[in-house]
Image (cartoon, rainbow, N blue to C red; front, side, top):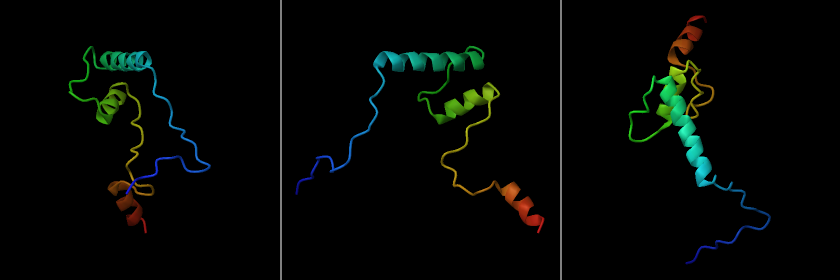
Length: 88
């Protein structure tokens, strides 16, 4: 059995081209400089940069944490749900 790898009729591959290596390096360097400035001269003390690293940087800069993309829509934290239920 063989997979048909041809594009489907009417479809176009719209995958964006990756940034040039120099641009990627420039953006990473700028992000690390911002982190170091926010953390009083320290770079992230982790082996792998993750979303948590970005959240830590936002916290150090006093910025609101971006909404959690994994959170289900329509859910509320327990404390808010409990207080909303107690008013009934």
